[in-house]
Picture 1 (cartoon, rainbow, N blue to C red):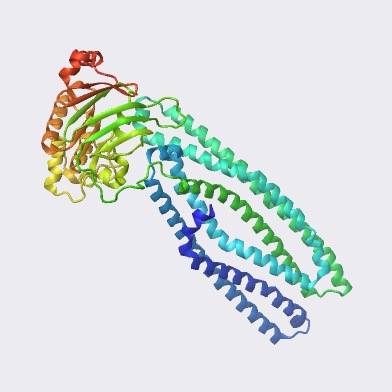
Picture 2: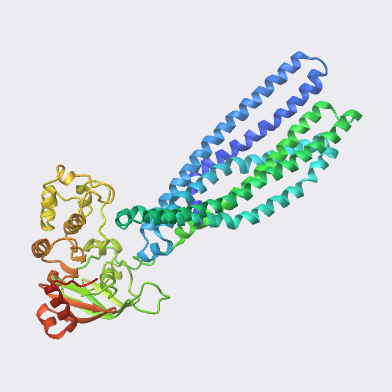
Length: 578
């Protein structure tokens, strides 16, 4: 974990060193004050020497000011280092997540990744800030105060030295008890975030099915689970304080008893005893701070492990071995005995022995029931997933021969779940081509039949969509996503059931526009309506992860019973479930 996390803190190493030095000097100057106070009592007050008292008093003020200045320096440097480390770590984690394949993201879950990016990183940066102060200040105070107290009276020091093993036992027991709970605490946070994310993302479904009460129950269950785990974890941490204070105050009482006898006997001066009390209090408080540091580090270790898991995750799909200058020569697509499944442990193939050749510029329709492998098939083309066996080629070369950027710049894919981002329509469309002109934007919107509703909007292309495109309907969202894909001017265009929310007339207009706007691009259209792919150059019928038939509409009507039945049922007013 240290190897993975330290590089993100290294740029702030000078700040960390400066903060450590400031914390150490703050403790040193603070420890010198009791010695001066002892001289005032034993010399100045005992001899009624006012000038001596004033000089030593001035020295105490100077020491206090110096300690304050170093304390401020420690606070500033720890804040800069902690916040900078947190920012670097979040950036590195986010950037690494961008390299993940879908399978990597599915391994963690979106909610867990959000927690690791926010809550876990926040705990790590706060731990660094506190460590720069406490992990330096506490040991320095402990060692120096121990040295000065033993120097004052070795006999008296044996009293609190006997308490140290007891303090160590308390800390070890609490650490062993709280470690697993802190790890569980972060997992419970993941579970709660998952419920919140699903509820907010699917709030329309929740309300349409009147399931608010069920969602409240789910949230309350996860929330109570997190609360109870937090109570158990922090409850055990809180026990540390009274136990430590019991030992500390017991030790102080013992020192008062034996120290008072020594003063009465004349073997110890009163000022030295006062100073001794100050040092023993600092020793005990330092020990308590050390125990709290260990408690904090227990949770920090759990968070660090979770962050390191993300940073150490190897992307399932990389561009290693690819030619950085290679672009697909055209939009031709070849599948050569391709096998694919989402999980290596799965016993069944999602795609099984698929072989297919699609010439560049052709339009291919893909039909099939739910789970037939349609989306899985097209997802292999831009390497959203990797084939387990066989090869997938675009432009005559294996997809692995291209860098991810070059390959995906040549492939435009409109997914089943249409996604628009917070901002204006223009900003969303420019994802397809950042340099697109006003004329090109409107041309793409006309091709996707999005101009019909855009012209009615007061802001036109500058209309604010709101979060996730909440200000437009499902059909309008689909058309905007298609316009965005057209702007990319790809060599391969994939539409994964992307016109399901538009009427048949609009669907036909969009398909006609493809022939004009993207006449050289290879177009793959997954559809549930035969009418959407009837005019395609090639139609694939899939079932059980295999291509069971392929050909034109006329050819399939003659020799594919499944296709013929689907077509006839839709002609009679039915629809294919998928």
